[in-house]
Amino acid sequence: MTTDTASPATPPVDAAATVARLNAAFATGRTRPVAWRKAQLRALRRLLTEQEAAFATALHTDLGKSATEAYTGEIGLTINEIDHALRHLDRWLRPRRVPVPLALQPARARTVREPLGTVLIISPWNYPLQLALAPLVGAIAAGNCAVVKPSELAPATSALLAHWLPRVLDRQAVAVVEGAVPETTALLEQRFDHVFYTGNGTVGRIVMAAAARHLTPVTLELGGKSPVVVEPGTDLATAARRIAWGKYMNAGQSCTAPDYVLAIGGTATALERHLTAAIREMYGAEPAKSPDYGRIVTERHFDRLTALLSDGRLVTGGDHDRATRYLAPTVLADVDPDAPVMREEVFGPVLPILRVPDLDAAIAFITARDKPLALYAFTSSAATKRRLTAETSSGALSFGAPNAHLTVPGLPFGGVGESGLGRYHGVYSLDTFSHLKAVLDKPLAADPMRLAYPPFTPLKNRLLRRLL
Ligand code: NAD
Image 1 (cartoon, rainbow, N blue to C red):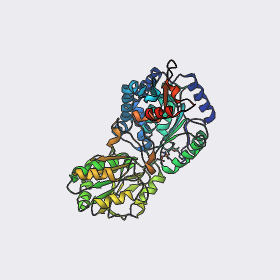
Image 2: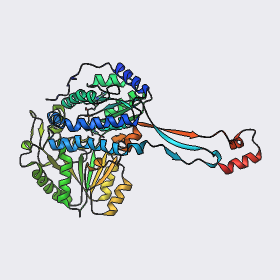
Image 3: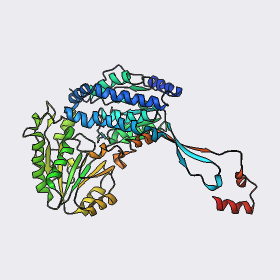
Image 4: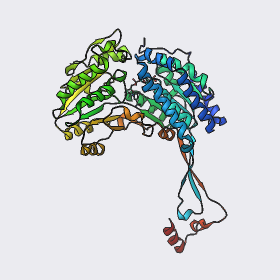
């Protein structure tokens, strides 16, 4: 049973001593060789395959997650991230030549990625394995030491990470600190070289303020209300199935889950029918009995979500049971844009549908609000796709498939504005966890630079203006 005040399973950790230990390890250079990085990534991969069942059990304990979702959304996704990094790391780390202007020749210029040092990864409870380990893959691939702070609201997964990571990874370089606000606050008082935070924007601001004291760069992977635009003329049955799949996985507790639907023209009524059918197809007549349907993480979140159930006409769902933190896959229609369910990120299995007359109204609705982590659209019109691409701003834009973009390893994952700052996955993780050092190498033998030295003459001025 998880509670909002879950206490750490491991004894309190001295944050200052942990960071000092990792900084000392980084200073020895042990994390820099590519061989070390690959060995760590392979060890992490081995852990995930060998302990898959244990991690799946922990995810079920924390969130009622099915074994399939534990694999597709957490273990498998992390393994893919590792494999992608192993496959491309040598190329990503290769210095890049940059052309040198005529005035500076002969010379060579290049960029070199260097690790930052010791980084802090703070992760949330909704994908408690993947959101702790995918950033760690990037931190290790870039050659850093890392402290991982899993979420206290997923205590079984947190305990398992704290147990295993020091056993399979280089414990001089990677540490797990379990805990809640006091432990995270103690960590944030330390000077890190990067802080990577995933969670809500309120805590994101606390993290950024704490990091600012040390001038530490941050990545903030936040959330928000991700809209789904549905246009007439699209295959509504398939759209409804895809929306239901994206919305109700992990009981709606996904940062990229469709938050609400903007149904254009007459699509709303048919969509209600198709969504009801899709939910039944996926979770049966009684989703409470489905082994594939998750539970709400805590009673606080359960109470928050059930308070939203009267914010529109109930199309389907609404059943709930506080003892098991079960809330049925729910669709609300005719929702007022100012209703509470439209004021905050739903982050649960409640899907409001709003009717809008046309695409202009949908775009106006989206752009009048905070920039979302993802925007989804179901349309058969290339012109609509062009307009949504050009006229809206969001972390990601996906046509025809919610959530799926984050499984494309070559795509960056991150928000914009209120939905976050920075990005990761694949090479973008390398960018996040490295400093791109500019290196210039100019031989001393020839010295045409003399042209740039004082005293300046009219002739030098003329030549310099031509050469620069
Ligand atoms: P959470 O409650 O687990 O908090 C996240 C982390 O912040 C935890 O490790 C927690 O210990 C720490 N924390 C909490 N309060 C703190 C404080 N006062 N000071 C320092 N650290 C503190 O998770 P959450 O915030 O409820 O997560 C849900 C939110 O995260 C949603 O908004 C969701 O959209 C967003 N999210 C975003 C992504 C993404 O990748 N962009 C992924 C998952 C979730």
